[in-house]
Image (cartoon, rainbow, N blue to C red; front, side, top):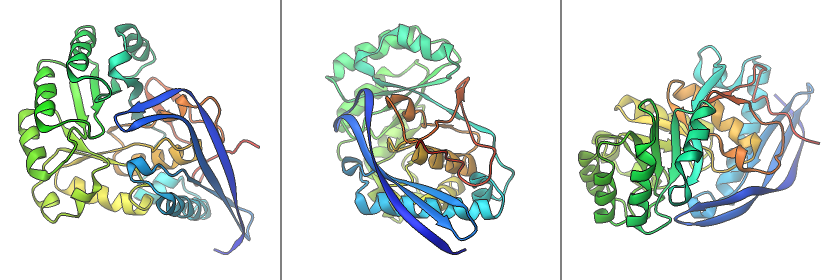
Amino acid sequence: MKIQSADWRDYQLLLRKPWQTSQGILTQRRGRLLRLQDTEGRTGWGDAAPLPEFGIDEAAATAFAEECAYLDLSAQRSDQALNAWLSGHPAQQSIAVNANLGALSDKSPAQARQAIAQGYRILKLKVGTAPLLDEINALKKLGVGVPAQIKLRFDANRAWSIQEARDFIDACQQLPIDGLEEPLQTPDPAALATLQDLADFPLAIDESIELLAEKSFFQHPPVRRLVLKPARHGGLLASMELGLRASAVGIECIVTSALESACGTLACAHLAAAIAPHSVHGLTTSEWFAHDTGSRAEIREGRFGLPTVSGLGFQPNH
């Protein structure tokens, strides 16, 4: 495969409402699309959207975009959807995704009911953005009205001390909880393992990727779930390797975007379909943008539709 041309296109996307985590608030997203064209007329796309506060610097974001564009071309050349090219299995038509509702502290049962009516079965909320007691009260209020088949997924973004995390986990007892990501300000395997023993649902690590470098992590997993953001891990191939290692020792993997545009989110969706087609992933972030870099995937009944064409399937706006 020979590359004939390459160019970058800057973008700036406004959010419909602020994106709030324990690390801060975003109101817009900046990034660049990479377009590669080969000598046979194919076009490959990649998305570079740095997010330093979550471990994605310019170099990591650029590497993700470059690899994605090359893999897009490679999958097109093989006449396969990117997820099929990655996995060696037939292409997936869709994957399950969670609703992304924002901060727990400002959510009402009515907003949860609206997401449920749209077909979502897991509702994800940010925690650690308000005083703990306020969030526990909001949790109890929300949990009472959740139907039996619906579960709640939380992300604390490293907000709490171990005692605060214990208190939140205790408050989750008897509630339909799917999982809790990054509960600790200063995570370490021993503390996470202690918390995981207390919880009857999976704890997950996301931005604490330094823990993955410890030899004991995969020998004695301290949590039951691993969240993969390809831009943080060096690209789709490195993320797939991590996913395979995790699955081999019984750790569930879910894939989330790093609030990239439609292009990067679609790449994440192909990875999710390749490594964990039966899990529920965090890929509804494009709905937060007032406009986007290209056509968005259709989400129907809580499922993210994947393109049926070969390659990535990204269609840019002009």
